[in-house]
Length: 105
Image (tube, rainbow, N blue to C red; front, side, top):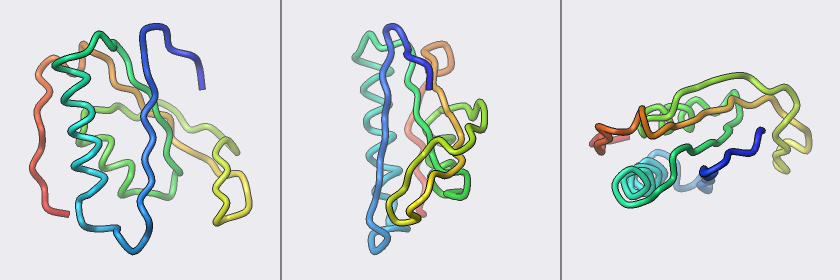
């Protein structure tokens, strides 16, 4: 993943027993709301496993744009292998009208 000047990376992981409760959605939206309102960060990047549809949806709801697929980039110990992932980014121009999306998962 390229280095971002004046930017940051965000990553999250939730134990499977806690999936579906909206925890990751709440945390990602809160962090992004702070970045958009109170920081000088202009760009945020992240990746998620291509098969983690829920994670991709969380990022999209938080204002991220899916950019490209990166082959064999992400190592997940539970799979004991490298996996393809989606690269996402948020740019301040995209986030000017950032708002929290209330959504029960």
